[in-house]
Amino acid sequence: MHNLIYFILSLLATTVGSLTGMGGGVIIKPLMDVLGDYDVQTIGVISSITVFSMSAVSVIKQMKSKTKIPFKTAIPLAAGSVLGGFAGQHLLDFIVNALRADSVATVVQNIALAVLILCVILYMKNKKRIKGRQLDGITVSLLAGVFLGCISSFLGIGGGPVNVALIIYLFSYDTKIATVCSLITILFAQISKLATTAFTVGFSGFDLSVVPVMIVGAVAGGFIGALLNKKCSEKAVERAFSAVQVFVLAVTLFNIVNNLIN
Image (cartoon, rainbow, N blue to C red; front, side, top):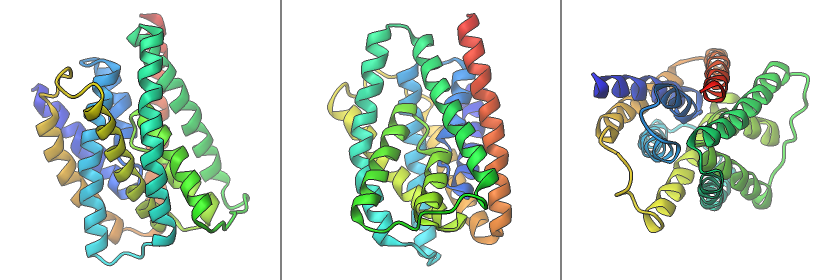
């Protein structure tokens, strides 16, 4: 039953993550906090492995489908996310070690996530009244990638909604193109995070017994989500994106209250 729960969680989260460009970690991380089976750092590693599997499948699927990808933006974003991924992982390790209380670290992560999601909800709701920047160039894309990679790694969410919203705002891409750019950024951010873990503390100290079933769910979710993204209209993708934001915000608020009470 334990493995079945995590397989379903992985499948549903990564399907939605692949469809909307959120990666799935933004759903996996807070829900794993609710289940309470693992500590903060273990959840981060499990989430990263799962999201990496999904994003790799999704990006390959999108490229095979000949989806339009603005590589002049996507490549610097990916490179920046690698640097940001290293920084985010070190920041998480520092905070966990400094606080010496797993519940407090969980509260910090969920507060940061709740604030970011609330900002994204407000932006997406009012984006027609907020003029996009239409920025261009390697420097802007690289810096944006560093920021997104750091958030992705620190929060263990794979980038999530912040990627899509920021990419839409900075470069004035539509939601579908922003989704592909987000998935590429997520892929490289997770490579960075997992490499940092491998070359510092290693994986032997983490309980990763549930990872195999979550990878299977993530691979399936990556295929299904990429297929849905190709078939769904721009409006349908935006609606799915918005609905998930509200759900995740509710879960993060529950986690904050639950950890403060206990």
